[in-house]
Image 1 (tube, protein in one colour):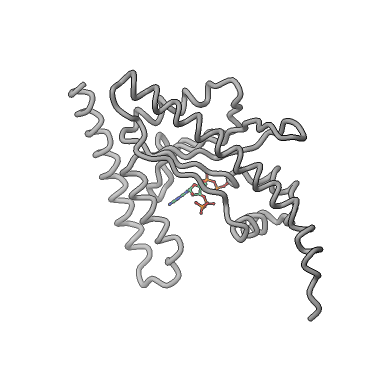
Image 2: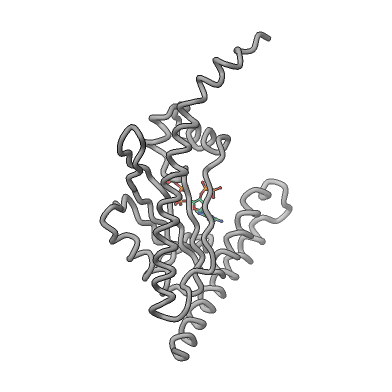
Amino acid sequence: MQSENPEEMLDNMQPFLDMMMNYECALMEIETKLKVLNSEFALQHNRNPFESIKSRLKKPISIIGKLRKKGLDFTIENIEENLTDIAGIRVICSFPEDIYAVSDLLAKQDDITVIEVKDYIRKPKSNGYRSLHLIVEIPIFLTTGKKYMKVEVQFRTIAMDFWASLDHKLKYKKDNLKHPELIAKELKKCADTITSVDYKMQEIRNMLE
Ligand code: 0O2
């Protein structure tokens, strides 16, 4: 089989690499905003609202998979217009109240446009998944001018994150398990327990303050 020449291959990849760099810049901007909020909150309340912040760019293979699922071709336009989670940030907080306090402060910033809010904390998914998802748009300033990029920010508590990572494993191993529905049922029970622990801990924290 005749392969494409390497120079041509690199040329074809360049728009994709440029787009990913733009998403990376958007991630850096949102991450900085969150870190500023964390520091200021810490000064005012004498504690950090975040346990950790993790950011990631979606892998090219997952981008291809998601486009395919939507029946779309792999083009820069399709990615930018139809996928909202190429750039993702996960903010892990100790308490549910902090999630809403910090996400409100982020959403209110005047260079940020909130495109969509999915509140799986107030309205959990049927499997028990809880998290607050914000799709935001932020301008990045390039040599060629201003460009608006979308970033998905997921806020969850330590307990919600612990649960989601186990659930993620279930998602990928489901086909090879003997009793996936039993595991899903047990996980759902854990989600309910975790919810009550999250709010109980918050109550105790509020009493301590
Ligand atoms: P990954 O590997 O984390 O990137 P849309 O993006 O609106 O077309 P989608 O993807 O259903 O549709 O949106 P949603 O519900 O907001 O989910 C986006 C992300 O939230 C997922 O990304 C997961 O990271 C997380 N998530 C949503 N539901 C669940 C769940 O039931 N369990 C766990 N563990 N995580 C969940 P990806 O692309 O699926 O995967």
